[in-house]
Amino acid sequence: MAIRILLADDHPIVLDGLEALFRLESDIEVVGRCLSGDEVLPAVRRLKPDLLLLDIRMPRMDGMTVLRTLHGERNPTRVVLLAAVFEDDQVIEALRLGVRGMVLKELAPPLLIECVRRVHAGGQWIEQQSSARALEAMVRKDVAQKEALRELTPREIELVRLAASGMRNREMSRRLEISEGTVKMHLHNVYRKLKLENRVALANYARHKGLL
Image (cartoon, rainbow, N blue to C red):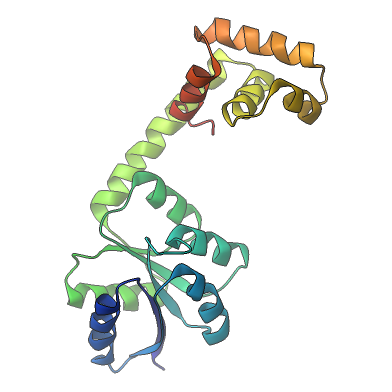
């Protein structure tokens, strides 16, 4: 039985090339094409393809948003992400969301076909340089989080996350069910421990330590 594949890219000429490539393969059937991210979800739900070849940068709904939605719906369609370049955070999140394929647009056509077959069969095809960088980033983030845990109490870390996300003292007191005065006291201790002066510096610290 042929592999039923849905193509999603915002460039018609790319879609034409991909479709022409796959139509040469007797075991691959192109069941649809999408030019924008908001077309992808309805198409996946309607066509139920075996595999979605998804450009990570799409108008009106980017590829990562599409991926998160499909994952939340527990959609069985396997996804291969396509990009000119992958950012470390994108690789990490995609792996956590169960993506089995990530390929660069510079990949040779025969290798793309091999990638589709391997992912459909339950295997994995991840662009090596991007995955290596992402793994290094994960290790750095894990080390930074452990450092933060040594410096701050669990309650202080919770407050750092909330403050760095833009929440004001009154909102934090309601969220944590403590007084606004207690919030101020905790934040004062955080600034003292970390030698920080304001919330901008605190937000930068939280991002650096992977707390957001």
